[in-house]
Length: 146
Image (tube, rainbow, N blue to C red; front, side):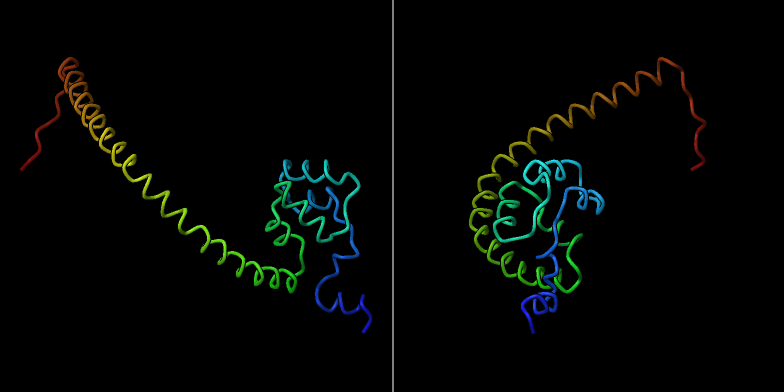
C-alpha cells in the first residue's frame, strides 16, 4: 500500500487538501473565526501539525473544525484522542476549580445575604405601592364565596 493510499485508508484525506476561508464559511463557521483564519492564511493552508498548532494559538475552534470538516472515521478518531486529553485536562484543573469554589463561597454567601435584604425591602415596597394604588383608585373586587 502506498503512503497516499495508507493515508486515505486511515481517513487522512485532508492532508492533500487546502483548507480555505471560503470552505469554512460554506460549512457554517462564524464570521469572526473566518476572519482570523483568512488573516493567518489568505490563500488557505494544507493541514499540518504546524498549521494545527498555529490555529490553536490563534484561538480557532479546532473542535468545530473536526465536527464540520472531518469525515466520520477521522472525526471519531479525533474524539477518541480528545477524550484522553479532556480527562487529563479535567484532572489537572480539579485542584484549581476546588480552590476557586472555596474562595468564591464566602463572597457568594455575602452576595446572597445582601440580595435577601434588598429583595425584602423591594417586596415590601411593592406591597405598599400595590395597596396604595388599589386604595387610591377605589378598586373593589367582589367577595369570594367561601
